[in-house]
Structures are given as C-alpha cells and as structure tokens.
View 1 (cartoon, rainbow, N blue to C red):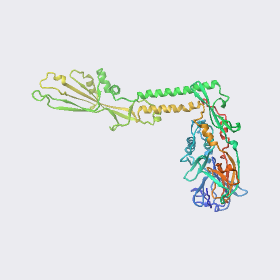
View 2 (view 1 turned 90 degrees about the vertical axis):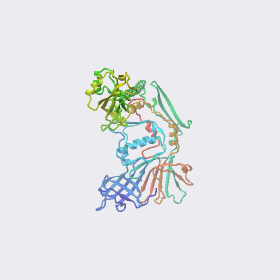
View 3 (view 1 turned 180 degrees about the horizontal axis):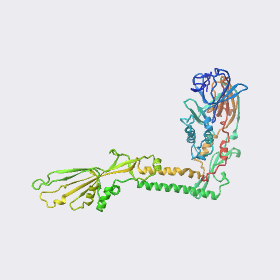
View 4 (view 1 turned 90 degrees about the horizontal axis):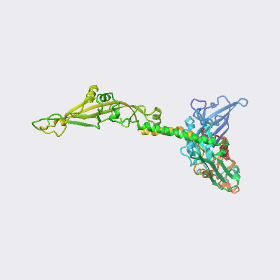
Length: 593
C-alpha cells in the first residue's frame, strides 16, 4: 500500500465534523497514527488541543480517513477522552471489527450454538452472517480462499469475532484484512498458499527498511499431526480412530496429537453415560420416524378425490337421495353432451328430431368460476398450520364444481333422482328423455330403447392448498428431522472429516516468525495485514528469502509516514491456539446436552 499525504478526516452530516472533509493540519491534529490488524479492530488514534473555534469531532460519530487522491483508507466510530491538565482531546477510532468483538454470537434463548462438520469457509461466512443479521455495518467477502471440512464446533458465550477466531484455529495460514473500498467495510480472508508473496529486497536502493528483527519459532511447526476421535457403530459399539499426517518418527516435542472425542477428553465417560446417550439417540430417531409416518399417513388421505363415493356424503342433496333410494348412485362426468332422439315417426323415417344436454366435468374452481389450476382439495384437518407453513404452502377456500349423471331405462327406479330433483336448487338438477339410436319403424321393443339421462350439478366449498399433499408431507418430515437433529448430533462424537490431518498439517507446515520491520517515510510500499512477507538480501539468513510469513499488524505515523510492520500470528491468536481450544474441558460429545 502507498500512502499519499496530506490526509483528510470526513465526518457525518449533522455532526460537529461534517462530511466535507478537513485536513489533519487544519484540524490541529497531533500524534496521528493508523494501526491495521488481522483478526482485530483497525484503529486511528490522534489528539487535538482544545482551542476556540476549532472543529472537534463528536463522541461516537463516524469518521473516515482519506488520502490526497481521495482514496478511503479507514472508517470507524470514534471514542474521545478529555484531559483538563493538558487541555487536549484524545481520540480512538475503531472500525466495524470492534462491533464483531462486542456482539454476542448467541441470542438470549440459547445456551450454545452447534455447527456440524462442514467446510471452514462456509462456517466463517455463517458466523459472519450472524453479525450482519444483527445490523453490523460490515459485508461478507464476494469470494473465499480454498478451505477444507473441519469437525463440528460448539460455541458458548462467544462474540462474533471470538467465534471467527476459534474457527480459524483450524487453519494457521489464514489471516484477515478489512477492505474499505466499498460503501460497506468488507472483512476479507486470505491464506498463505493462495496469497501472493510480498518481497522486501534489502539489496535494492529503494527498500527503505530501517530495521528488521525477526525470530524463528520452528518448534511451533509440527512435523507430525494426529487427531484421535471416536465414532459410533450402531447402538452398542464405539470405534476409536486416528488420522495422521507428516513424519511419525519426529521427536515428541514436534508432534501435535489432539483428541477430538473419546474417553481421553473427559474422566466422566462411564458406561452408564454412554448407554444413556445411545438410548437418547435411538429415542430421538424413533420420534422422528414416528412423526414422519404420521405425516405420510395424513398425506395419503389428505386429497379429496373427485368421485361419487367421496363427494356423496359431503353434499346434503346427494345424501338425501341415497336415503330415499338405498344404492342410488351417479357417475362423475368427464364432460360431454348427452344426446337422445326425442320423437318417433311410425309412418316414415325412424326419428323426428333429437335433443342434447350439456354435462360439465368435475373440477376445482375459484369463487369466480375460473379453474383453480395448481390447487389441491384436501380434508379440513389434513395438515396443521405449522406443517403447511414449514412447507411454504397456502390454504384457501376453493369449490368442487361439475355434474354427476345417470342413464336409466323404463324399469329403473327413479325414487332417488326424484328426491334429488325435489331438494336441489333450480339449475342444479335436470334430465333429458328420449330414445337411443337403433330404433326402427314399428319395432315392438321401443321401451327398451327409451332412456332418461339425469344430471345433478355439484357445488361444494372445500379447503385447498397450492402444493401437492406429498410435497407438504416431505417438507413436514424434513422439518421434524431438523427439529431433533441438533439433539441427535449433540449425542454424537466429534469426528475428524476425511483428510483433516493432512489438510491441517499442510496449512501449518512452514516456519513461523515473530518480529518487526521498520520502514522509513519514503518506503515505496507498506505491507499490510493480509500480506505475506519474505525478506531478501546477501547478509540475511537464507531461510528469510522464502519464509512468506503473515503480517499481523501495521502501524503508520500519519505525520512522518514511518511504518512499523509486525510479523507473526494475529494479535488475538498464537502458535498454540488450536491446542488451547481443544484443551478446554467442554461437555464431551457423548452427552445429549
């Protein structure tokens, strides 16, 4: 990064320091420094002497720092203090990462949050998303470096930042940098393997390094890594497994051996506790299965078929017709026109004329008469409101409309139809009489060809949903399983995802350094957090040429432009972070919670 003075402070409309911008000199700013950090809050610090007419920023107002070219270098909320003896205001301006440090990961209703084994990048984005959902002025990066699956993790009493830092202990090569390029600050993640190398060449006339002091810590680089863990095999067997990577013959103090789960993680692992947990898992799964079976059974009988047997008991007129004539039935129409010859001429052609009657197909319609395409008629109590909501289905009133019909001869009983015609509203029942085709002149069996086509129009209000009952059932079962998944997972051991040992070994298989690099004001570029630095020169240790070590912090004096670059792990991390986290005595994963 190249810094181009003079620098300007911009504030907010309606505050003492407005958005128009003032140079640091015009504001009488003293001792201004900008410190940028990996996995910690960036800070701008400065002092102002109290003076009549001088613009003094308000406490808790947003300030932005820009250079002479208008490039935004930093933004944050200021906190000021006043010293009466010196008549000075001291300001500390912190960026949005401070909000991550102060915002709880958990809401008030939960004691912990449990993430299943998943890709580390997805885990970081989910944790950061909780801060964004809480209203923090921060954005997730548009892309992430390549990560790998890590074991499930439980967080208690963590801040958003604390959870990010805990998760990143699975990748010692990853650092963060806050980007101020957009309208909202973006927290970016970078890894040693994918980030470009920043080289400081001490043989170059323009390097401007006034001091380089670095200490290697080869003991912080494990030559062998092993993760021991347990895995359930049914209800009664627990397998104890190990993943390893690196040199198994390395000396003991250069080996990293961690126990993710199993009896080594707790002295509370007794057979009674293990049996209880196994039974708890089985019971939870049985409950999920029972709920699923119940939902499947409801779905199987949820949809109302457009049949006589299904609709006859729902229509009072049809029920009365059956009561008047037991066994009375009609057929649902597929939609056609009934046609009969309604006159007979015995002295000429067989038929005088014909007549027809429209029979409307049964279907589901809206109140306005339009076909209710995509809707399914269901029993009123088929699904609960919660099941429909889980599936994203909507329930509304629709109408089953259409005709039933019956074809009867002279010898057929018409008691049921007579009752139906007497009870139905006008227009709902009707009939057509006449002779079918095939009647010849002077045939004696004329009555056998006579028919009465009887029609009844159905109009039933029913509940309908805009999703197939089978789809509602599938969503309901998924929701039921999800509701107990956390309980079931809580009763499972922490397992090492495939290749965890190999992946972790590769990400820490480089020599860490700690120290500082001092740069004069004329330095051509200043390394920042997120950069990985190598130092080259004829008289420096050969291993510095390709060390590619992370920048933890960069502090710049905005008056002189002298910079101090701190090399090493992020301020809130250390070389033994992963060991420290897994050493914390937490409830082991055999307990259901």
